Each structure stands twice: as structure tokens, then as C-alpha cells.
Amino acid sequence: MLAPDYLDHAPDRLILLWQQAEDDILRDVARRIGKMDALTPTANWQLWRYQQTEAVRKDVVKLLVRYTGKSESEIRRLMQEAATAALEAEDEIYYHYGKEPTSFEESTPLQNLLNAGYRQTAGSFSNLTATTANTVSGAFEQALDRAWLQVSSGAFDYKTAVKRAVDGLADSMPYVTYPSGHRDTLEVACRRAVLTGVNQTGAKLQEARMDEMGASFVEVTAHGGARPSHAVWQGRRYHRGGAVDYLGQHYEDFESATGYGTGAGLCGWNCRHTFFVVFPELGSPPAWTQESLEALNARDIEYNGQKYTHYEISQMQRARERAVRKWKRRYLAEDAAGADATASAVRLRQARQSLTDFTRATGGRVDSARTSVHGFGRSEGSKTSYAARKQERFNAANTELQQMREAGTIKAKGRLIESPSAPNEINFASDHVLQRWAERGMGPMDAERIIRSSKVAMSQRNGTQTCYYSELGFVAIGQDGNVSSIGPLDEGGKKLMEVVKKHGIPHS
Image (cartoon, rainbow, N blue to C red; front, side):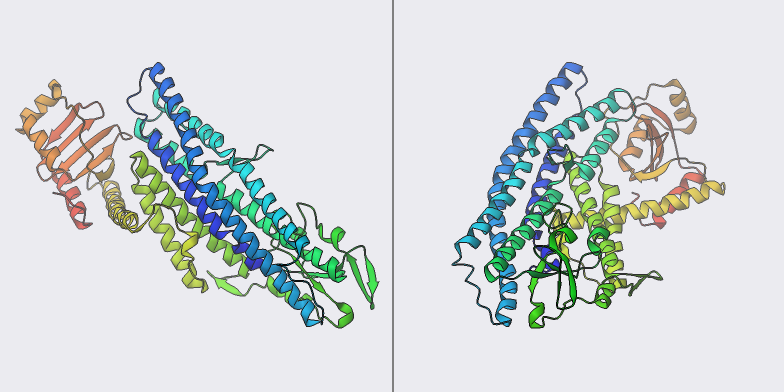
């Protein structure tokens, strides 16, 4: 017998392994998407697109070779460990009632069942990973096409299109394709294949042991949060080989009552229930009563003024842990693509704080394995924390600036940002601008000095214009490099810089 908690954590090491594979693939794909600029002629685009897609496919194949060997050895180790644990727990029951089962290690039939379970589990997962190269390269190709269309149609600038493509793949890139056409991540596919394989192999070993010992009654395990279709039969006793009335008690047929042997039933897809042998004739007491089954779903944990079950709390924590992983993955993917990862750093900081606050409030514990992402170490953690703190200062400053606009204190429109690099070529030829410069006693050299000394800017006109600010004045420049305005700081500009200083944003 394998306890539900054991089955829940059995795939953990394998999941971590394949999460690493996913993260490696994602960063490789993101790096390639980040290189799609400067490809304007359609012929160049089509050739580059083909070359990159083929390169992704080949890289994924190489990576899978590296991970598959580790995966197969881990599956074998896990199956051996789980089989031993299942039969040790089962044999304790036989020993308790004075029965002598044969040694698992010396039983050829049981060892054959174990080996068959390993081959089936490893084989089913191997069949899925065989689809990974085509699944990933197909998703990569589609992301490239969407980004190219967005840029070529003028819907988005290059940086925005790249970031959207990378974020989309970071959040939902498929890695395997099932025969039905359903696509999923390696992590989910691994968990499903391993959990199902381990549980079914353990169940077959227990059945074989029952046949050997002439036992026919079983009790099914129970756990909180069971699917409604499983909750009706968990924690109850059944008879193998048909329904019977025995010692004044009615026992339903094991297979027909629980769906054992089907994908949707006991020990089926992603099921954490199993069963163990019982001997009613020897006074074997039930492990589960109606009261204890009801207690599994008792709402006895308070959070935010409401009561929740242990299972509900665990799922709420899992959701927060997944959010931390999501934003770590996004940050790494955006960084690999050369995209602005500031927003992801902020969301990661918020997700971490939400998880910490939740576990403190509910008495839980953060499982670092569930939030880890391959390639996200201390250095990345420091970078994201710094970026998040800096962005939070900008957010606070923008909130105050908006309040000042509404009060009529300042007129400058846009969103306060860290000064970006100026366009490679700046055009000072506009007669209107030159006249404004002359009126304000400023020239091209002043514009260059303002830009060089600027630490903050206002992003204006939906990002198509940047207005650089420093103590020397301001300069507004379009994406095309044309200077549209220049001048010393007026009262509104001075108040803007005061807000910048107030929130601890570098300004000079």
C-alpha cells in the first residue's frame, strides 16, 4: 500500500529534472526570438525563420538525449523504491495475522510485474517526449509568425512584439503532444505518467500478493479533496471477485464499485488512492469510519475571515507557488531575449510576498522545490529584487504625478520611466524646433548635454516619444530621432524633478 502523500510526492525528483529541461528549452527559444530584428525583406525573414526553427528542433533533440538517460534511471529507482514500500506495508498486515508471504526480492512473478511496470511507465513517457522536438519547434514557429505580423503590420514595435512572444511561450508553451492531439508541458506529462505508473504497478503487486495468500477483501485509502467520483468509494471495504454478504456485512464488488482497472477509476489517471488487504474474519478493524472521512474535508483552517479545508489551503498554496515559478520563468526568458524584464521582476516580488504572507497566516511552510527554476539563482534573485524595488519607486512617483496633473499642478503628460538610450541619429533640422531653441537661448549642444545627464524620462504618445529630463532642462524626441521640443525646466518641470527626488529615484 502506498499512502496518498507518498504518491503525491513520488514524481517530485523527476518533475524537477524535466522542469530543468523545460527551462533550458525556453531560454534557448527566447534567445532566438530576441534575434529577429533587422530582418525586413520578406525573403530574408523566411530563410531566417526556417533556419531558426530547424535549429530549435535539433537543439531540443540533443537536450532530450541528455535528460532521457537521467529520467530512465530515476524512473527505475523510483519504481523499485515504491514497489518495495508498497509490499513492505502490505506484508506487515500479513505478518500481523500470522501469515508468511514470500520474499519480494526472491519472487520471480513479482519481479516480473515490477519490470513490466517500469517498461510501461518509461515507455509511455518516452513516447511523449518523442513528440517534444516537433511540438516545441511548432510553437516557436507560430510565435515568430505572430511577432513578425505584429511588427510588419505596425500593430506593435519590435521590442513589444518580442516581449509578447516570449511571455506567451513562457506562460504556456507546449512540450508534448498526446495521440489525441492534446498538448501539455513536460512537467504535467511527467507527473501524470509517473504517478499513474507507480500506483498501478504497486496495485498489481498487491493483487498478486493477495492471490498468493488467498485474500479477497480490501479497504481503499482516502484523502482530502478527492474528486467527487472518487469520494463516493474512498475509505470503504470491498470484495474482489463479486459482491458478497459476509459476517453480517455487505461488500460491494471491488472493480465495479471503484472502477479499478479503468482510467477514470481507482489507480487510474493521476489517482492517489490505492488499497490494502483486510481480514474481516480475523477482526481487522476499518482504518476509516464515516466520521474520519467527513473530517478529511472539515473546514478548520481560517484565512481572511473564512474557513477552509486542509486540501483547499494546500491548493491555494500550490497556486501561489506556481505564480512564483511563472514569474521566474518569465524573467529568465525575457532576459535571454534581451527584453525589458522589469515588470516580471515586480510581479515576482509580489508573488513571493503573497506566498510568504499566506503560509504565515495559515501555518504552512514554503517548499522551495516547488518554486525553484533552473538557472534562477542568487544572482538572478538579487537582480530581480533590485529591479522590483526600483520599479516600485517609479510606480509611486507616477501615482503622485497623476494626482498633480488632476490638481493642475503640472501639465507634463506620460509615464515616468528610467531614461532609455537615445536614438542613434538625432535630427535637429526642424525650423520650428530651431526657432524655439533660439527663443529659449538653447542649441543642439544643450540637447545632447540634457540627454547625457538625464536619468529619468516621460514616455509619451503611446511610447512613440520620449521626453528626457535633467536639472539642465528637457528634450522630447520621437522614435524617428526628430526633436520636437526642448527647453529649461519650468515650474512644472521642477516639481516633477522634486517628485523624482522624493521617491529616491536617481536623477543626476
